[in-house]
Image (cartoon, rainbow, N blue to C red):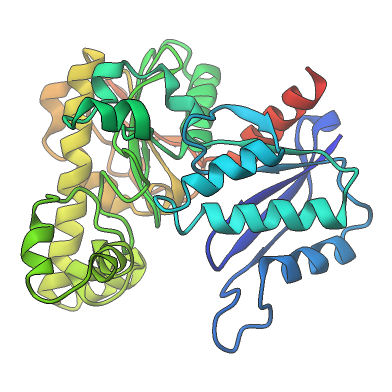
Length: 368
């Protein structure tokens, strides 16, 4: 079975085709950016799909979506009208993700009507989190009737980390997974199950993101609205002009911010420091939730490729049994244990593979 795994953003379309009869061997991959932007080559995600299907030697046997928010629908499910309608209901709180996924699902159904589609929701891995860590302190009817609670995201990535740690360090039962990239989250994993995660109702919350605000006091909205801004203006700025971009004033890309900080830009340095503090905050909290830490894992673009940031996160954590080996920490982009030999807690770089998880889930759904 060849599975095309689609990973979409509001202006991007990344994909891999994996042969699941050969343990997920990669057949093809590609990525398209700036879809629908001024001067872009492709106006819609449907245009990109046309190009992909023309270039593939044959149509895929199935399509798996790294879907983001299905509200009450979680896990991996076959795409049907009910799934699409439910995703549409939650599009207002996942505006960068749900609309392009819905559009792609409809486009694939039109172009490949006989090929089954499976939505693998990022929230699924976090369904094992205790309800005491899911609820907000809001009127109960908001939770019960509107589904306002913490869902958590990056489920495919954190699930991959949980699976991979079992393979390479089976003795590590208490794992803290740090998915650090353009979008970042941290998850506490006990015996392969998520028990706490930093993102909440939406992917906007938790750690600072590239240009998303992260945790934010909602009552600050009152002050902002009094400045003449509309609620839409405020939310747009929080989602597009906040985070690392908002603090640094330089870029939403950590590589650019690093260069600016090295050149003496104080706001860029502050953005990095604030990002590190957020990570350390959750690592500390999840040590409490887990009752310790057997393995601390760094993954995704920043986590896999920023030795200085990993060092900053681990600085002073010897009291918790975490000792980083500075030489091993110079590794970038490849799987490696980077803790000292006498560190009680293991520290790892593990490149994530979200597409493999989605392809596996897609195959399981279609064969069940």
